Image (cartoon, rainbow, N blue to C red; front, top):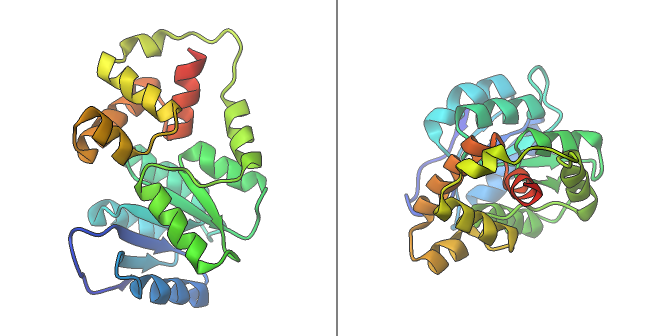
Length: 217
């Protein structure tokens, strides 16, 4: 495990999971140079990451899809089962790979191409921190189609509270967490707590799944 010196408690905290040491070291170096982020650690395997991430409680985990042993997809699924609020941004060399879709279905909140300019990665991380899901339209369509089941029951949606339904309506309208918090005059942490409860009631792991299931109901 590689650790960085902590800087501040009020900046987004990141963890990198990448098996290629050169790529991993470069990501840590670049992210550590950004004052608006704090890079907590970097891991070379999914197993090591799973053992440490729940303790570190990062805001965003950057995960390589093709990890040795436990894959990035399996890691995301395991992290989401332990804490549904964990935000995982996938890193991949393939834009429309089936693995990208599988990672999103497992609970990842978005993905970035490894060849993308570093500025785009920074923008994607901020998008995740603000409740967004960076991905291409092609993959987003696959995710939506996978959750369409004609005639499915809406019983789970009946268990949502009025405030939870209100938050889902705002999510469906495309608002970010901070925008929802401002509109409802609550903190972002309160919004995140409501969303964790929504995920549990709807038996989903991502914003996309929650909105699709809610609208379908």
